[in-house]
Image (cartoon, rainbow, N blue to C red):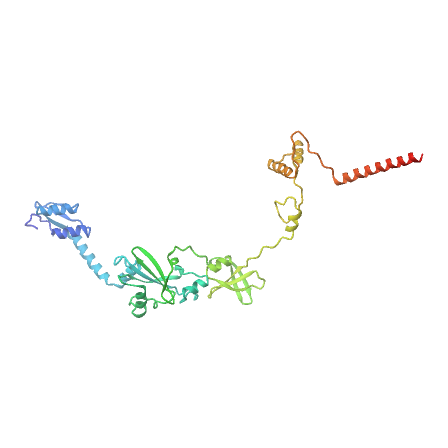
Length: 370
């Protein structure tokens, strides 16, 4: 390098190929060295190639080179470590391959109703293959030719040393990641069954132990905490009916490991007055179980209220006009509606007419005698 004309000992000389590799692959700062002892920073691959064509040489700071050497040594050491392998499994072996398979197995605290059960039995109980019940136990590259059957065989007969789960069994799930797409497969009694719901985003499920009211219900079978969840919500959470409290007010529901009390859904009580009200209530637009047989005011009555200074509702007045029209009492402009006499008045009038007829008959008989 000194023969070239560059003499600073803080710079290490580089050939063109090495300079291009470090610039493009290692993102290092490369210098263009000149015969007058000066240097310049390379800004592009073209600049490096043009400088080489002119017979120029390249350099890198010694500190940068030493740092790169230490980094490469550390990377090589870590590549064979257990921690690095576990990290690659956790992130789906993204640096190794695009396609992967991942094994999921049920957590230890998941109810026994889920463990080693055929899919048909799980679904028959109203349960689901919920990813919240599973934990990831292994991830590896999905090499060409690898099949689900091959994965089952390998993880039963020739399990990898770094696989810490149990032998692949019924109720486990294998997720294949191929060409950017994921498919979930449930290990069933015979073969696999696809379970797309395993990959769907799950909404947080209600759990009774987070919705307790603080009350306790005692039955002949024990004491149970009350939750404010409904019976339907409990069934969705994997709980079934265990027994009912003696007074019938509570359902005791369990999942095989724990049980809670929920309020029983009481049927709506029949209103004994409803059919009576329906038959005789005039304002039957409001069935309230109370016999309040108050006649709807007529249009004439509302007009009389308005003339006396009382405030009336226009909506009520419109309803009264409509009711009068439906009953054949449509009011004609400028003419007062004829008021129909009451039954008592009609009887009194009939008695008076009968008395007058009797007097007239008596008079006629008297005249005939004379």
